[in-house]
Length: 601
Image (cartoon, rainbow, N blue to C red; front, side, top):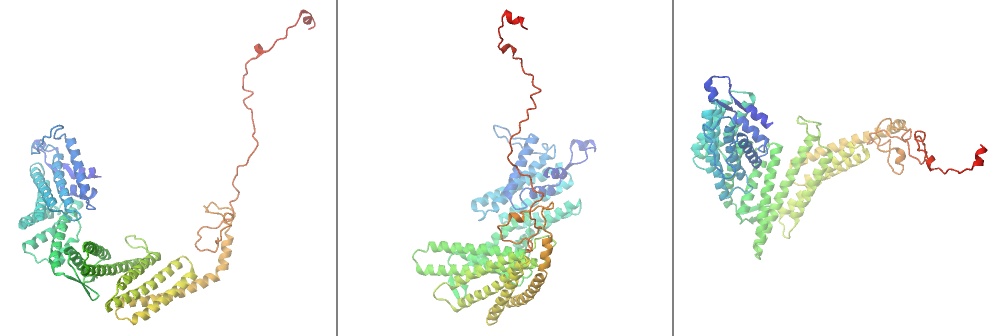
């Protein structure tokens, strides 16, 4: 598929033109279309720059061999690509893919887990310089050997690479802004012409360049861009935005490290725990900033996927803080006061992590409930089963039990901790009622009316008990009380439905039983049967009254199948009459007779 795209993206102008055009043809390369196709098919759809770099290396090797433009076998002798060297369009591809290989190598270094260190950053900038060098050469060759569109695209590509280099160097922001604006202007003009696919690609590249331009304006001081707007820009997707995201993350980390100097204590349930480690401060501050996004005024506008992604980032930050705290504990030595403070801080961070885990699981419950009532949506997603909600409520019960045990541990507990432990116990009552309700629904779908009715009644009593305790407690959320009231009403409705359905099925049981017995036959009637009734005589299970049985019961296969039995062997000597036996007269014994015996013949 890549070869087809390259063939369509790389065309030579009409050869049946005048003689001067045949002598020096103008090549056409759809640069953006070619690069987008290669990037999406070879790793950049998932941000895998190492795979894309390997593809560029393999592509260059194939081009060098097919063009017979190798640099010698024994001693390396570099061959320069000049205007006279470019005799076909593949020489332009050599230069383009060399620039792409250097750029992808730089982006690979940028995406290291802990970020590039000083030496790696020097190497990264060196790779970007090399990409700029080859992009300039590509632009120069296309201006001479390419048509006007190819020359424009190559110029925009070179401007984009120069902007990336200056963007990474944190200097000459006005020059970087000029290059990004130049590339945007070219892609805006190119997006007005050509086929639909090319117009879409140009518009996407313009949208990818916009955040970098706004950030350059912000650094110059010509834009009043706030940090929250920068974060919203960073949520956009695209390969051209990866460098911007890395730069934005570095800026946010620097800002957090500056703010973390003022974060000297961690407040939790009336306790104050000192924070001495700078890494712990930065991790906790990052988690608190993300929590503001979830509980702030704009939290309702966030989609469920973004909220789940934010929860994952919060968990990562708190786990990082806990690892720093525990490493400090290991190196604390015999200082009891320091150990007590670190143990208290570890307990507080673990408790907050448990609270966020409960909130995340509650979000998963709300998503599952929204998919429970509908059969299929536009995206053809799977329908939620009641068993999945039962599993989620099991997790919530485990989370509340762990959090309650964590808060209840310790000798001297403050009133806030006692109140928090009571709230956890009340939440567990609500979760138990919800779990029992959805367990009843799963039994109802399985056709087990008696079990479902009993579980609905049990869920109703649990909800009523929880409501009575909630009303005497003032710190419980009103949303949870409202959900419990709705659950109480639904339990009553569903229990009545199950009771009525059970009575109807009981009344129709003899009739249904007779109908099902009438369907029993000897053979399988050309239908596949797992086991016949005569093969299950030692099992106590119903064959006709169970609603879960899909296939009709069969007694015994008829007519019976052939069975092998022992018989005496039958010998049929059919070849005896067709055999010509040799004569044996010469081997037979002859009697010797005298003269007198001959006379009596």
